[in-house]
Amino acid sequence: MNSFLNNNFIKDYDSQHFLHPWEDCRTDNSEYKIITNSDGIYLFDENGKKYIDGPGGMWCVNLGYGRKEIAKEIALQCEKLSYFSPWFATAEPSALLAKKIATLTPKNLNTVFFTTCGSTALDSAVRFVHYYFNCLNKGEKKTIIAREKGYHGSTLLSASISGKERDKRVLDTIVSGIKFLSDVNPNLRGKCSEQEWCNQKVSELENTILEIGPSKVAAFVAEPVLASGGVIIPPKGYHKKTYEICKKYDVLYISDEVVTAFGRLGHWFSSEDVFDFTPDIITCAKGLTSGYIPMGATIISDSLIEDIKKSTHTNDLLFSNGFTYSGHPIASAAALKTIEIIEEEKILDHVRDITPYFQSRLNKLGEKYDCIGDARGIGLLGCLEGYSNPSLDEKKRLEIDHHFGSLIDKAAEKRGLLVRPIINMCVFSPPLIITKSEIDLMFDILDDAVSEVEKNLK
Ligand SMILES: Cc1ncc(COP(=O)(O)O)c(C=O)c1O
Image (tube, rainbow, N blue to C red; front, side, top):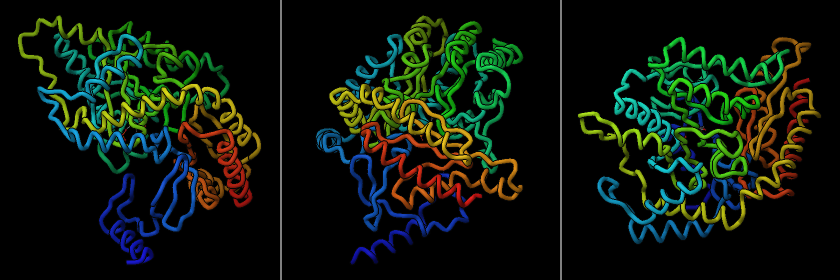
């Protein structure tokens, strides 16, 4: 069968049988491209067209594609022990990985609960919080405080603590026991200073805890940087102050580092190293295996484990939450190799070195084009947000608002760069191995793409 026929079959099979994430069931996806190959920061489609992978897969392929060392480790582990039941037994790579992660986290987070992805890491974090307070005879503490624009996953529970309104329009979520705080985006602060904005947001958390009653609030869940909400970086000092509020009212802090852990901001974890606070629980996934194989983790602080050990509860205290694939040996082997490469190739140093250049190229785009309202980022995370000039007629303005992301996406893709469009934004998080000349290539393409979009919008 020649590849032309083959590709047509693939597209047919896909369009008839593969329901993709975030897809409208009425969409005809027969035009989707087929990704066939990869190398470093590049992807290739069925026609051999080469693309820079701007979003690094889905914020996950931190070490880039085609890493033979990871492939080899996966194959070796596959032959040696492809699976073990994590109920009442362990396996070498899983135990080694738990120990290794404990050495990379802030020093008091040493217990690792392995999950299958980010969503199940968040589910497990929330379930652990409930378990913890039940064990301590504080079963009334149930409410989870989350934030607008936060994203924590796609299971019913993790979607319910996510605050992206659009995602709740046709899908139901749990509403009881979950409370949302308003958007922290400093761009919305109008005339108030960043410090005042920060204080307002911190007070909102405190007032919400007081309204519900501290004896009923279990945890606050927050991404250090709201990634798919549009790379929103909360105001300076926000993380530490919200953490202090949580401590004041015996509320646990879950820091969702599914995107920010394993190097995205130049550190293993960003909560302590970048934002100066030490959460009670950290969730991670994605970069843990550099996207080579699914895996996530919920990392729990010593004090929570010690409190449970001291519990006088008369029932047994099973944490009856777990997955067939918790601590999967092949995923663990891939994660160990990923961490080893990050160490050997000094990837964290590289990210810290290259970040100022990446961010300066991003800022220049924001300054150059009227159609960009904001260009923001941190580490190797970036976002371009569209600006719709009030002097344009309304139809045009709506067009910009609703299509800015996809217009940039199309213009960039044509030129060999993939970005991730989100309504009036497009975000990117390239593999961490990206070099200075590849950053230039990426932003030169984006520059061209934005220039085309701006011309068409006038
Ligand atoms: C911050 C954050 N948390 C959790 C998740 C869910 O992870 P997964 O898609 O692996 O379930 C994501 C996914 O993008 C995320 O960005």
